Length: 549
Ligand SMILES: [Fe+2]
Image 1 (cartoon, rainbow, N blue to C red):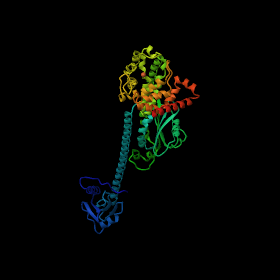
Image 2: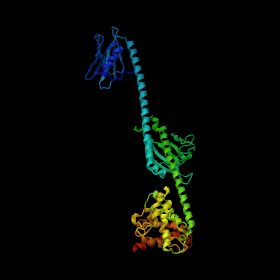
Image 3: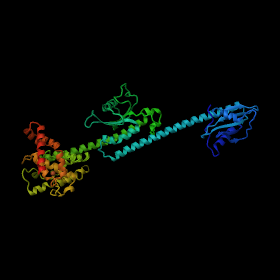
Image 4: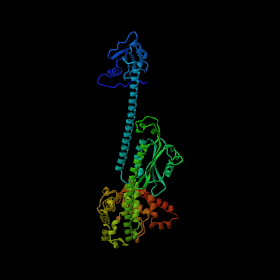
């Protein structure tokens, strides 16, 4: 039998209040004794004249001070001496002592009844406490999930739509691994342009995950119309008798699905088991959650996958739009090539050269791509130049050249109302400016010329010099490079010319493969590699010669 305990706090001293209740319930007098330096009477209700010949109360108190059970003694006058320890949150041992008019049997019955009521109360309290713990854990889990989703939404809000999933995952998934308490998180996406090659981004903490194992996991994923996560905690692929791939003991895997299309998969791998009590919400759950992936983790993975799938779809739409735009641009440029077949391929090559220069200048992927597209359209204004001038095989008159010089502004006016092409306008308008102010249309100088214009000017000049025209052969690469070096700092931006030289090998690979030059090089050299090496040597000689000058 457990002792009567948990004295409730009230306005009067709790032990006094307790004594009153006992006196009332037991039809008795009651004294509360505490062991300070010795047993001292503290609170009294009623008088309890102990028959000295029958009981020495001090004797019984001392006798029972180490007992946790009530002590009952029938006295000669049909009264009963009772004594039981009271649990209070003090450092003093405390007992209630009294003499009741009730018989020992009646007292025992009351004690039992009180005790069972208390037990029920305790059980109910424990159940409520456990419910509160669960609610608290759930609230914490919800809060952490909300924090994570908000962080992910912020990442999405702050990133441009063309940011790749892997790039997003790199900065976002670390927090997810911490929340889910797993050893690795993987984002698996189909490789660009392929349907069965898989690209992986894996973030691990304290283990190395075999990428092939991740690919194998995806192969076991049953393709379905839902993105319900698959949860495995026993090392066996669910709904099969196949063991998990090497290095994977447990996992949650779900697909990034949007409108019926699968953009990839996200997986939490290998539940981290520490056995330590942490403040993390999962550790407040039952012990199973410490060992296994559960509903909370699966929900979090699914929410993450839904958000990433939405981003993937936006990315998909953005790429489709970009492809459409590039297609339109190429169509426009083809119509220009048809108008002037001798410059055929010029825009394509300028676009590629300009991108190489931009890459060598360490510009961002986005800027390099913008410069490439601008290179494709830089001469679009030539559609507005009369055919007889554009196709004239010989030297142009002053008036004819004035007409040609209008093409940057014509191109600008053609494109200026297309919002999607706004970024190409500076390059289109200023690709014929010179850093010394001798160019056109606005005679801008140095850094007044937009960077795109300065880069395109170098790429454009190199291709113009090395391309064959009906009235002249293309200039040798060595000669063209010498002219660029000579004009660096006057006609062309020196930084852009230096970047051009840095990318010379890639540029030459494009030059010798161009439709115009291919035949020339094939006649002159036994292989493409010989042609490339020869041109590299000649360019190095040109650079060396320019350096000594
Ligand atoms: Fe031009």
